[in-house]
Amino acid sequence: MSCDSNELAQASLNAGATGFVGFDKIPFNRFNDAGGPIGSHVLVKHCQEKLIAPAFTAALERFFTGRASLDEAVDYLRLWITKNAVAYVRQYTIVKKKA
Image (cartoon, rainbow, N blue to C red; front, top):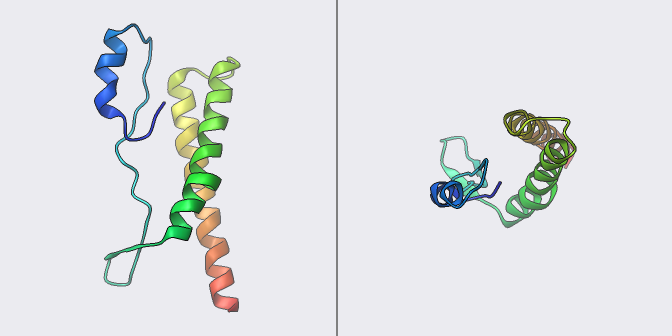
């Protein structure tokens, strides 16, 4: 599993990997009312440190302990990220409203 690594998949499989999970570059943006992206250093750091890293850790732990196949670990990764992204947005919305 690796971010921004889809171009490594075939070479990894050719070299003997039995599975590969890769991703395109992950955009870390908020969007304004017109749908335009708004970059934010705080959002990028939060996503990397509080969302993506723990999600990978949880998914890999499930795979390596035999509690999930690779496909199931990827599904778990998607579920983890979605759940925690929604929680972050809800928390940010509450904080913003109180401010």
